[in-house]
Length: 538
Image (cartoon, rainbow, N blue to C red; front, side, top):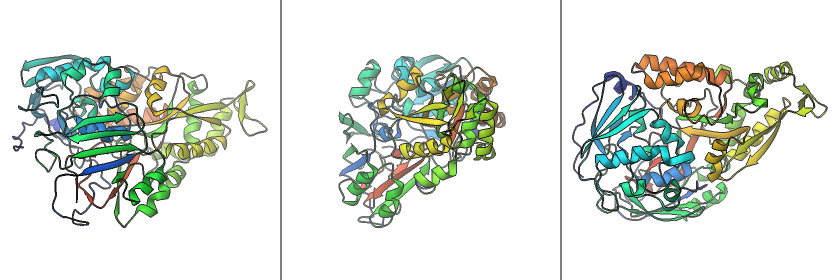
């Protein structure tokens, strides 16, 4: 691949500054390439990766579960990429871009010669087709719909120039173009129904091509012959090193670890805490990185009768011992939540004092709300028990043990909790339908606008928040071109969410992988997912 031409910096310094906010990194890459075998990268081979779950969908624009994103991300390219070390937005399919003064117009200049795996060309029309189809994606497309909310038009300026115009300033959009959710698919794929794209996959321009998908069993990808338009962050030019990628669904953490130790697989996701000691050292490297975005916690259905009462929500917030959960269940180094945003997210605010364990406060709040302790310790009011259901999905081995601790902690203050497990593929429809009290969830994105996507009443509003001043702060941070003002608005939004307990933050998600020493240059991207173009086995 020829070297990328120097891209034109946007004619808008504040946004450029905003998008270079540093992102903290725990570990990146699979260590010293000379640690095992050949120290010189070589082509060929198959990487077999064991993941814990399958989202039931292989369309990057609709997948929200990390375990499925690992694979489908490799099939599509994005207009831009984001440096995980600096947060800077850099060229990928777009060699340059221009942004107008108030961030309502984004003009992308596309690379020439890019093709999809069906042989069709990347053009401005294809980008327009992708963006125009986003509103039709339905429940599984909530993330990407948030990124494009308020779009006025997508216009083909010429065959390789496309302009996206928003009704209001939209400071977050450039970073959104670096995400897998806005990965560009062929026009033929765009014309398929969302259900067809989920089950059959899509035609992308990425370095790997989907060859087979067996739901809840495996996803198989093959090298894209002739690939020559990778991200400017990648070290290798042209085609990827690996010939084939196989992602096997292995739900049990212990079985995944054993498969890696025995050489049946080359890498595993969601390393169980109990398996860390056995995997550390020897022929395995442990990699970890805290995910930016909304932390793991309890998504609150604020329209439920019991949860409409702010005192009940605040009592739940105060009753949870976040440190105990992080230390007991999650990988070493996992941090308790100190805000609704992870500390790796730009414009994060430390609200740890608001999230401190205070069981006495929790009991006092419940007493004030009229919930009296019964003989069994569970509180009641007007003859009804204070019973709540937490819906959860097995897309990470830590989910159930974490929630069992939450269940114990809430029982200690008089709240009876029922844990309700669903299928991973039901997560989006559960939120959309609203049939839940609390749901265990997180959302990864390296931009604070994820708060607007998650909690604005003007978007999907899956958590049924009432319209409040929070909407003003969330809309304002997306619109402002002033980085200092945006930081202040994001801080206010975090405080409103936490202090009103619209969401109950619990623990930061830390992506932890275990990789055989023979695997080199397996790197995290800015969202703590993986990039496999530069990965090789030797």
